Image (tube, rainbow, N blue to C red; front, side, top):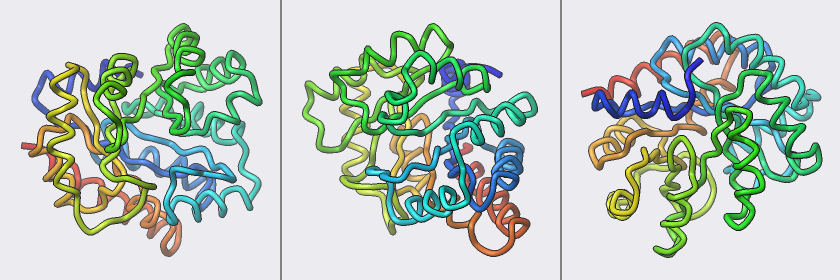
Length: 265
């Protein structure tokens, strides 16, 4: 499996916008998670974000919070999530980016955590509550394990902080399109276009836009504004949880194909 950087740069070199779906591991169950990773991979996903369920998900909106709660209630542990990654990663092309919070990493020990996820086949890491001032503590050892840590830029970040985040982020820069948590919204805020311009003025790294992108039209708009990738989470999580597992997988496949078509010129 290629690295996050290799996949993002290859797509950008071809003038293509990347599609990055997000799903919550263990919702509705681990077997469906494994199947969903394969479905997404064959339906247009260029990279896949896999959320580790967490009891206090500060950056997550109601849809993903509910998914985490359901997953945890079934006893999902990090080891279960990584077992799925280890099983599926040799069969798919899309690099897997693990989405988790900082406290579980610290509790396990940074080196031990990185060793464990690298052994499973994880290629990237998003830690939404990782303080910029502590990034080196995680990012430096992560590179030794072949893990790229993607940093988030908030729409309220001052220019100096944006520049610092852009400089340190690995793989790509994750531009948060809204102030607040993830979730399904009716439109993408127009200031995202300005934020993309601001970021592009200080970095040549690929930029992904996420949080609040829930419709095909949103993805196309963000691509038109110059994003190198779109991240779609709650809309996938909701579809996967509705109805039976088979119905959820069918809905995810259809939606993924539609999104990919919308950002392919």
